[in-house]
View 1 (cartoon, rainbow, N blue to C red):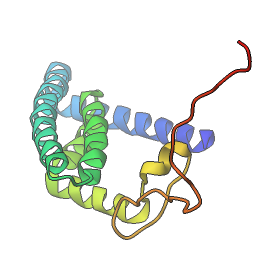
View 2: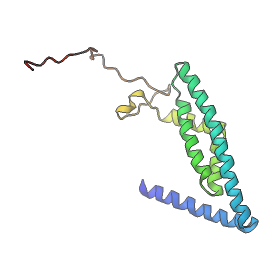
View 3: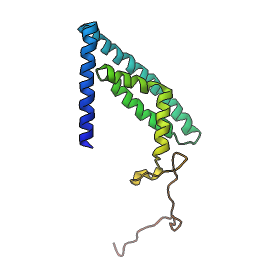
View 4: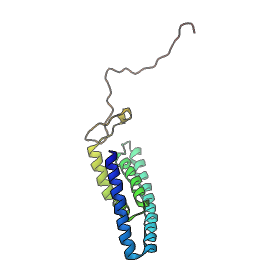
Length: 155
């Protein structure tokens, strides 16, 4: 896993340097730096506005009593999008702008939800795969709910 991440980050960094040098040789140093700064500012403003829309959708799903799985996955994707857009470079900006598109982000989120299902029981360490998106926790029929009170002898 570490080796794959190392290769990924190294390849992206080298690609970013290559693209920045090519764009810098075409436009010049100051316009290239200005363009990187402008894309970061515009991208962060767009991420903020889409994040607010996503929060509203999340609240509507909760109010209806539905599990907001799609909104949670898209929220995580928006965090990744924000990081990509603020990272200096044109390749990461392009990837961030692609993830900023609601249709692309929604399609990726649906694909993720279709392949990996999270359950409320995931807090206990597992994932469960179902067709509905979120599975109900396994309730053992032998469990009897109740209360208890400890009575110590002579204490």
